[in-house]
Length: 420
Image (cartoon, rainbow, N blue to C red):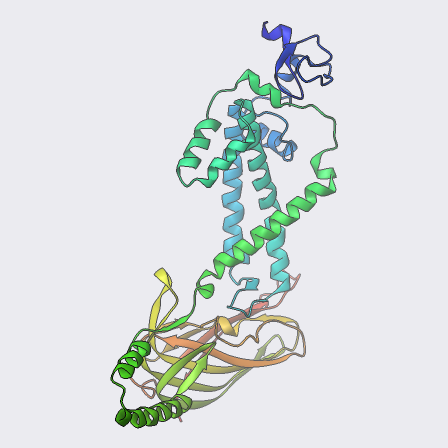
């Protein structure tokens, strides 16, 4: 039976006579279509970047169809270019300050306006993601393969290579068995389509902010110089009645010293060798009717070297600088003291430890008084009194519709002399 004398059952996909009204295999009633009519079921025009992208957009939520090889790869190229442009803008603008701060268990939204801006950017990215996914399904159908082959993508490297090979193969006329013609409203007129887009956008939004906060999520403190458990085991093996009283005395002394010579940074206890406290009278009321202040600075020299972070982000420190900062918002502003940068008089530049600093900044409404401690982990510190000054920089901005307002954002920059 030639192709002109046959068609494919719309239910089971088997080849049946072109004139058959019912499938002789499954009994399904057939639509009055022919192989010639379904050979180009979505009216594919000349493949190029514009036509192929338009075709994919129109069929963004269609999987019961096919897509030619040329149209698929032209569309893939267009989506790739648009994705790069939108993602770059997202990273350079909206992610300069993450809208969602993931800081251990103390996660919060730093700016609702920035969060809205990121969500709006994620909407077209979500549509492109859906377009690319459904296009892969239609391309597999065009090669007479089921969309279930996409499960191969779960196999690292090999699965991706296999799918690319499938997507690059020629059309197979038997793939028309996947075509099910139906007259429905365009996807952008269906509420379910927009619900899916919103869900994908929210997932993308969280992913973008998780990427920006990755170093925060991996922050933790590990004491690399102590091995108290092994010491305890050694003590227990040598335990006798004479040493028992001595160990009890040492335990009491150690507890007392820990209480006097340690600080809690987040959930971690840091042993302190020495510390120096300094006062500051810095205030700045020159911007946005708001007042920023630095009240006091405490410099700690740790007893041992500690590590912060993990993997490639792991750093060591043997000093801590704690800065008490405050802000009084004279209007609605966004301030980021917990994302400050600190420079020491001995040439070190340190970013604030966002995961363990107090949560007091971000989006502040007019009339808000807020203050808290910002921690900086110092990689090298010889002594607590070895610094003569520190330099602090942080950013703030307020939302405005006036594009000529050059005062809408400000970088605060102050140097504080450390004198007792």
